[in-house]
Length: 81
Image (tube, rainbow, N blue to C red; front, side, top):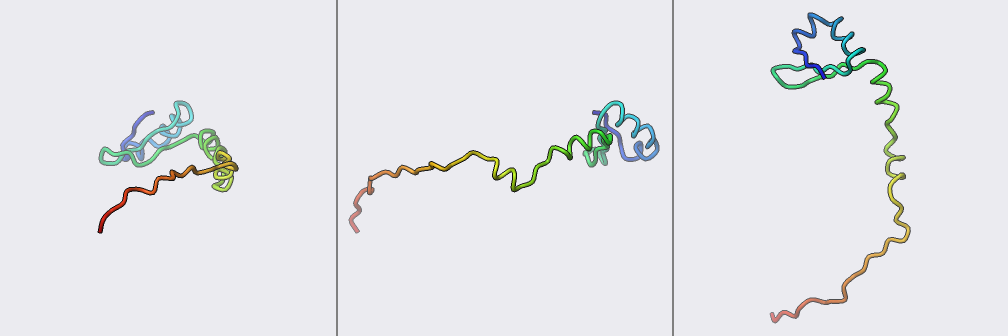
């Protein structure tokens, strides 16, 4: 992924958009740290289409119908008070 400083991204916005469409996501930095990513519409739609709801995620987990906890019969040690 290419990296652009904010000033450079502002000055060359058309080129930034073209690069996002042809070369993939473009990262925009401010003061040396990453702050934003420019994506093509196709990349954005592919990312947003894969999201499932929290309900579906939780219901899609492993089934625990026969979940049983085995407890130790050990009562511990005796303590003189």
